[in-house]
Amino acid sequence: MSDAIPFIDLQAQRGRIEKQIDSAIARVLAHGSYIMGPEVAELEHQLAEFAGVHHAVACSSGTDALLLPLMAWGIGPGDAVFVPAFTFVATAEAVALAGATPVFVDVLAGTFNMDPASLEKAIDAFAGKSITSEALAVEELRPKAIIPVDLFGQPADYDRIVPIAERHGLKLLADTAQGFGASLHGKRTGCFGHMAATSFFPAKPLGCYGDGGAIFTDSDDEAELLRSLLNHGQGRDRYQNVRIGINGRLDTLQAAILIEKLKIFEDEIAARGRIADRYSRSLREVARVPALIPGAASVWAQYTIRVPHRDALAARLKDRGIPTAIYYPTPLSRQEGYRHYPTVPGGTPVSDHLAAEVVSLPMHPYLQPAIQEKIIDAVSEAGA
Ligand SMILES: *Cc1c(COP(=O)(O)O)cnc(C)c1O
View (spheres, rainbow, N blue to C red):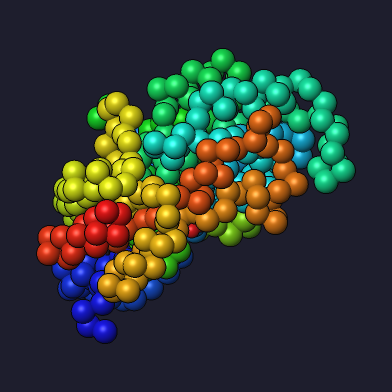
């Protein structure tokens, strides 16, 4: 199996920085501060600088990075939070965990990201109106927040979504779990919205060797509140608990690993961009390739195309030893655990359509030109 093509090649990256990572891990084992060791604060400092924000707060996962801001804002029962229907489950899960109600909004076919028109329609439908639903057991939903997602690595359309949030007085929490390292008009994700959440799950553009995440904010008060919440609602000293929190800390070992990976991240972002450009140039005749909004530079967490006979294409690629993945086969609004939550009037036809047409190709910074050629040839032949 040595010549099997990996979908994401984490071992190639490991080969590049093995010595540095091994000695970073050894340093943590030697000093023994496994929880909240010095590497956590060091990483937070570097992440904040990278994103161009005042504070990065490291935490245990991307899911907790979404939950903690909602807790900090006191969002809970009776509150509506607008999320795209076409995303990874954690975007809506965090809202439900906070006790609030996710309201599903449609996305745009070209970019896969939240459709600002569908968002406005959903806000108008729920603002000040009573909805009674047995499953929800609430009489009136109060619109409180929007969570746009930087899906597959491209920033959401913040130029259009920020004014909508402002007009309706809603909090904006950017889910940049897949988008950390991307930029819009030269500004890195992490700086868009009131707060932003990212994930260091191994397969994300910047991943650790386990679970991890971070929250970005410019507010000193919010950063302090987040640090308390992720540490059991800790007050000024460890045995003071001034609020309900969670155990949401990032391990020191993961912080030490991320510090080493951050050193080569810019270089990896550039490599991802070159690979995506080549895919787009070569495949635009045989498939619908991803569209970028003006000013956006994607970090290409996934390279996702649309074809009418997606399953047939995936099967033909598999026969040639080329792995693919389907992100996502079912919109969240149709998932068993989520379908009782409200959806924008008119539903989410674009999300439904995408779920049937998308297929993601191998994408990572170490994808060799010859392998990429093989993938492009196989897609072209299957599509022709
Ligand atoms: C991965 C992901 C998350 C959750 O991150 P975890 O670290 O796995 O908890 C949230 N939102 C999106 C869009 C993701 O892709």
